Amino acid sequence: MGTQLSEHRAFETFYKDVRGRLLLQTWALTGDLSAAQKAVRDALVIAWHHWRKVRRLDPATSAREDWVRPLAWSRAQRRHSVPHLHRDKSVPAEAKATLAALHKLPLNQRKALLLATLGDLPLDQLAREIGITQPRAERELQAALTTYAATLGVPLEDLMATFEPLAEVVARQRWPRGSILTRAGSARRRTHTLAGALVAVATLVGSGYFVANQADARPRLEALSLHDEGSSSAATASLDSSYPLSAADLLSGDDVGADLGGRWSTEITSDNKRGTGLVLPCQQGRYADPHAKAALVRTFTGKGKHVTAGQSAEASASATAAKAAYARALQWYAGCVDPRVQLMYTRDVRGIGDEATLVGLRDWDDPVRAVVIGVARTGSITTSVATTLPGTTKAAMPRTTELLGAAVQHACTLPGHGDCTEDEPRTKDVPPIAVGKYPGLLGEVDLPPVRGVAKPWAGTVPVAAKSNLAATRCDNADFHAKGVSGDLTRTFVIPTAKNLAPAFGLTETVGDLGKAKAAASFVADIRHRLATCGDRELGSHVTPLRSESRGERQIDVWRVVVETTKTDTVTYLMAVARQGSAVAQLGFVPSGTVDMDPAAFVALADRAADRLAHL
Image (cartoon, rainbow, N blue to C red; front, side, top):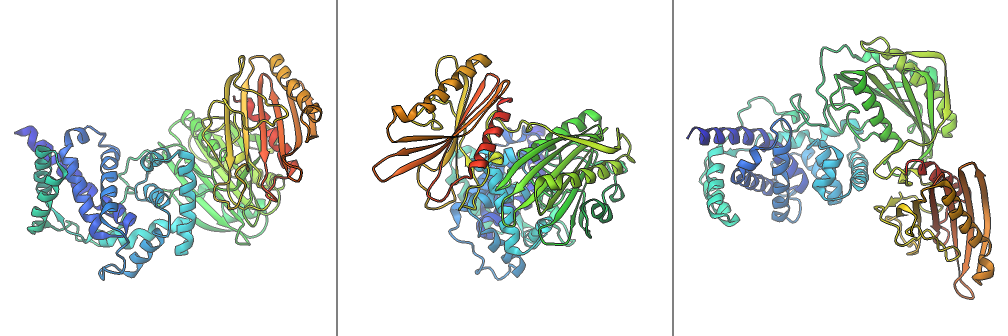
């Protein structure tokens, strides 16, 4: 009897804790408050049915709530066909505006937005719950954030405030007593049929046994979301209020103006526990150290709508933890998933903190801008600065270096700091940082834009290179042959662009020949086949664009034109890159005027050779 009472009390506590948040999330998803209420109640009935299993989930995390939410969402979606925004007169205009903006988003984008904000899920878990890959989830979330904020006309840092009107409505809702749900769940457990549970819920709820929310004070969003101070989600650090990190330890507008020029004003300063948590360009998580003792972010605006700067600072429990945070932050920026952002350069920095790196990116959206992000660690403190400026990445790098040095100098007043900033920091170009699950392959962040299409690239999941679409009929290179290991191939396309030829796209195929001599022989064979193609394949014309060999690095690029009929031809750009024993082949097929600049393709072959070091 005592065990049974304990189980009921544990469920009652869980029920009171999650019901408001689940209703807020489910209503935001569907726009139908009535359907959301019924769906949340049904999902919690099922949770009691399976309580022995659910209770074993870690109560210190959101695991129990994450188990229930998909049940509520699927039932709510089945119960409604269109948002009932025009039917419910009790819903205020501000809440209706929020719901209308949400329902302009495609379903996966809406789910991604709600899971990242109201659910506070990290990207990998978010992707699993939606049922898509993590790279796609990252793209969907970025698109959702941009579209939603633009629809409502609010900056990203104010995004969470748009859910406040919904939270106020949710907090006024009346709920059945927990015992009503447990009785319905027990009935469901006995019958093992959903129909029995629905009858039980309908009967008991219809009888009028409700209790109101206990709070008398005006409800706030924090009471319904997972962004409250007690949250222990992996995406939210357990900040220690005793650590003396304050706004005075961050860059000021004057600091930014001194290094970047012009007049700058502070836009926001926050501990980053509210909103989306994604403040700096390419940032992929709220904190680089999920267990940070202290954290602050600050953004600045300069003269011009598209000129921005920002800083984040985190204090870790130890220098070892800070090293991990530094590496994680670099992964975010070097593997940027923002649409149409290309990695241009990576530079190692000496003389700023214990370690520092600059990542230079180009945002190809109109207006084209340079995005430079610097990450530095001094002792147990990690800081990042980001600038978005007109002009080239190389021109913006020296100014961002100075700003990073100033940020580290501010951090050197804090407990646990290490080396500070020298008078003349030194930088040098280094190969790109290994990022992602397949660091030896090109990623979307490496790809240049094409003429005639202003849409982002998307890559397929790499697979064994049983078929090599990067090859031309001149060479037919086989990366799946005996003696080649680690063979992989993937294709990049622009799925949101219209009227492109089916063959359009970029394919990369890679493999390791085991020894540099074997790889050099493999490349020599491709070179020979391309040089003699015109003799063997009538109607094929090969033009060398570049041939370079330096030690264990080789780059060869060709334009191949193939006559398919008397009047039609197909043009390819093809490259082979070798780094030691590893070889990559690139093949690009344009579509009419939608083409890649040859110089950009040559630079891409260089990047492919750089990536091969991580194969």
